[in-house]
Each structure stands twice: as C-alpha cells, then as structure tokens.
Length: 244
Image (cartoon, rainbow, N blue to C red):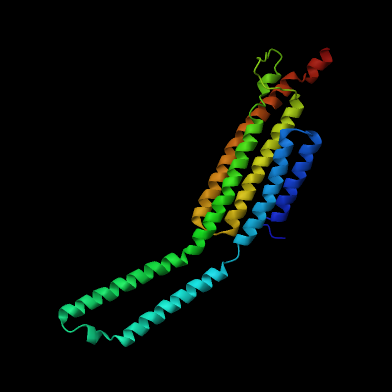
C-alpha cells in the first residue's frame, strides 16, 4: 500500500459508509439524499480521473504523424525547388531566406499547439468534473444553513416564516459534523484530478475547490463549537453537584 497517493477505492468506501451513517441517523432527511448523490459523484469522479491518468496515445501518434509528414514535406520541397533556382539575385535570396524563416516559425508554433493539445483536452474534462463538484459543495452548504445553534436557546421565539427546527442539540451537532465530513470528501475527490493530471492549471482549479470546501467547513465547525460550548455551560461542575 502506497501512502503517497490517494486511494480511490478507500475514498469511495468512505463516502459509502458516510451515506449509511446519515441514512441510519436521519432517515428521510434531505441530507440523506445529498449523501447518496455524493457517493455516486465519488464513483464518477474516480472513474473519470482513472481515465485521464494515462497518456492519450492516439492523439500522440497523430501528432507524431503530422510532425513527420510536415518534415518530409519540407525536405521534399527543398529537394524539388533548390534555393539557387529561386534566388536569381541578392534581393531574391533575402526574400527566399525570409520566407523560409517565416515558414519554420509557423511550423514550430503549430507543433507547440499540437503538443499542448493533450493538456487542453484533459484540462477541459477536469473543468467539467470540478464544475459538478463545486455545485455539490454549495448544495451541502445549503443544507446546513438553517441549522443555527441560537434556535436552541430557551428564549428563542420563532416567527411565522421560520423554518421547521426539530433537532436536539446532539442531533444538530451530528448533522453539522456529517456536513463537514461531506465537504472534506469533496476536497479529496478534487485532489484525484490533480493526482491524475500533472498540470499547473488543473492544480490551481483543484486548489480553488479545496479552498471553497475548507472555508465552508470552517463555518460549519463554528456552529459545532457553539453547540459544544453551550453544552459545557449547561453541565454542572462536580462541586456544584456536591452542593445539590
């Protein structure tokens, strides 16, 4: 077992186990559907990253064939039309050399574009996968948005338009913790793309996804901290218990 690479099978297993945990604790809740969707997305991204990891040999063979064909064409033209026949005087010689240089530069630019074509294709496919992952992160954030620890206060008075809140403090803490775990899984799924495609553009896009998930997870943990502090304040100290 290598500890220098992410194991796609273990990530999928973690998402599957999280789905089962959410379904057991909150059956019928919207978060259960989100966990199911995340499990399916984990499978899709793992398969997509696995397909992107090996080189595109068909494209590379095509580039090699175009390169060899272009080189053979230049050699053939240079053999059929010698430079001495084209250039009758000094002006014609300069023009011929300039045309040859321009043609060589265009050929080099075209070759570089062909070589970078594989990276552009993979980068576009990664962007499509990360787009779905970004949407999933925002969906998770929407489900934790109305889980406010302040609503558990004794003096809290809901309005007529307040959302239904029927979770206890312990249940809300577990709910928020599940959201944080889902956000952590999305970061690991994004990292699968960076592991499969060694490209600076892909690395920056993956880093943006991880930053987004981390920022939202930090917001979730602020709520969990409030719940834990509230529980500690309500728990009597040993001395207070002895007085009772």
